[in-house]
Image (cartoon, rainbow, N blue to C red):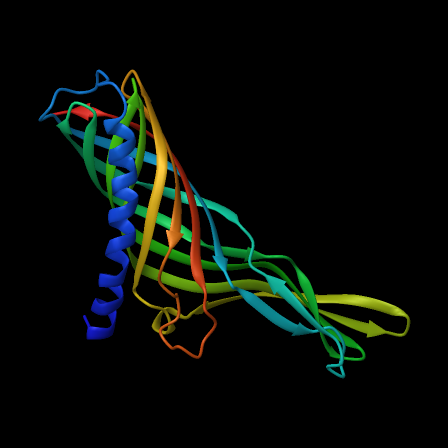
Length: 250
């Protein structure tokens, strides 16, 4: 781990401490709610959706063969799978701590567009997606403000598993006054070497438990750039995670 990364990580801790302090202050002002007994350990297997995007993701292309008109396709939210398990420790009557390991498929999608190759040839790009897969390790402080209802904040480390840019391309050729579609081919480009392997974010959210079923929603503030090199676009992960799990008390 290089010194620059350690220095950046140290700058993040004050933000995390402030978020956790807000959660704790909110809880302190609430009456004690009947949660799990103090000292209880629980495991919560969960599955759900990652509503993910990449901020600052722009793909530029030529609208005409003379490169006089330029188009841009921007990253959009897409829904992907996430799942894993969290362990929770009930430290106080209305405060608990959680640590999890979650597999999360993230990234973004882009709208279809056409690239002008020359006056008689165009390429149609479809099903465009940049997929980033992570193993996320979230740590959260959970404050119960009503029976079964908790607010939470913490720190999440994401370890990059894969990064791939994929799309399908179809050549469109003009013959006389008619445009004819050619064969379609698919491209799958691995660009993991260009990406930072560690992603840091601050998750804040809310959960509700009923009969041991836990519904959880979180928004993750992305703090680290996705590219290693500073001259590359300043892209960051945007993530909303929605999950349902079942709590097993140990």
